Length: 409
Image 1 (cartoon, helix red, strand yellow):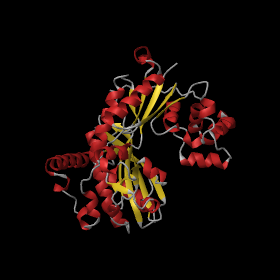
Image 2: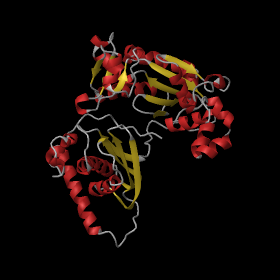
Image 3: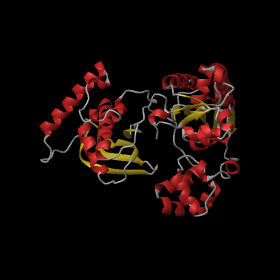
Image 4: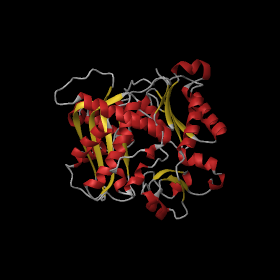
């Protein structure tokens, strides 16, 4: 039987800030966006703030209403990455089967390590102790025989805890929990299950495999397999690189987008970012997805297949603008564009009489030249004229600190 651990650094960003700013350790603390730029949500909070009801993802004003004394710090992603890397170095001392699940979480397959270090529980306790003494952070670790239950275990008891889930006790622990606590069971699936009076994991199991498949298709079968403890997904080696399934970018501008022309400025900025990342990974996209959020916080998405693969910003933006014309939902609070259905740029491509190959080649050459200029002299060294047409929206083109990218299943 496999022995899988899932390790989750507790309140990661806020805990790291408390180490960097010891004067804030005894007060309610959160890491949040910039309210002046309307990036005003809680990214992380410490245990003291949590007791006031502060939640990750809620607006800053709402969190401050719950906790007027809340100290909010801007994110420092390079610092967080430094600590997460140190945690990963500790994990790798026990096994090379370490798979990241975001910056502050990881699965470890320690099946082959037990003869050296002891049982899964013993290894988990040792890692928990080392994270605390060497990094000053606390960690919750789930120990089980598959990845899904290990992840469930790390969420089950927080902070600073180890939870063991076995073939003998998983029905008592996992089945009694809300169905939304199971990995990859999202809000829309939960709503659909609740509509059928399915509230716990056990309720979903009783509904039956065939019925779940009938309602949710492949996702229904996955839900049943996960709930029954039948997941056999392997933990990847630390050196394995996960394939990139999509590349996107989105932004909340300093003001609402009032019309199509406003949105066009942002789409060009975002498309240039997406196209550059495609080229850096030697990829082409064969589809584009548009994401918008209205001023009433209604989220809408549309996507389309492309007639030919591309990694050129002008082509990506053009397709995004075509999707945007399907909406009449202004003003918009935020907008995003994503390159989907990716293929290597070395893939054979079907020629067509409807595409000017010479012109496309010149476009790509031009964008590669622009990449080199920006890499050498800065992002704002060369800018499209359309972006400069609005001094406020053009601020979205300025470089800012970004969270590191992590690619997962």
